[in-house]
Image (cartoon, rainbow, N blue to C red):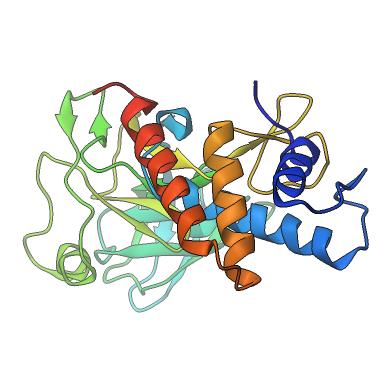
Length: 280
């Protein structure tokens, strides 16, 4: 049986000899509000206590790039007479520009779709007409339920190579700024809420990684959540773990003399849950 929020609170209050509430979310009684917040805190802490197999997900995506011609002007950050702006207008800052007369680590700032022009972060070093430029997306949004990356799961499935990283801030700037900053392997870094790759890829590569989801609650419709907002929300952790954990947290707040006993019971259940989660 998987306890929902109301059932969990009713079991804990019943075992602690406290009046069992008929609702939790809409309840204005102080001890019920406290139990709700303690239960949410318990779930959030547990979600980071262990790499639970139920929260381990795969994320896969294909790299995006476009090749268009444009006019460059030495000393200017403007690109004019772009042959197309398709794919660039919605998220221009995600795209890095490469080509003759373009400095390393140059990104788009903005794109004028109707006017066939764009602005870059660095000025061109040469002038040219009809110059072929590659616009490669290097920033990819993380999944909406992303909590943390699972190490050593980042692969280019197209090339059958493991991606190298996560790079440190120092390594990242060396890659983007140094003379020798490319190679056959893709480097990556999670930064600014994005999965960022280097070097820019002029190919549609299929990349992927595993991550831990922050959705430790399941709603009645089966939708995952990162906190409990409805009485029928169900915990994805074992019932005994949630019951003993909530009793311990509440006893701690109330300075209950049985606090250590409740803690011991919770720690036993935590060890059991970890051991049984994905097999020994």
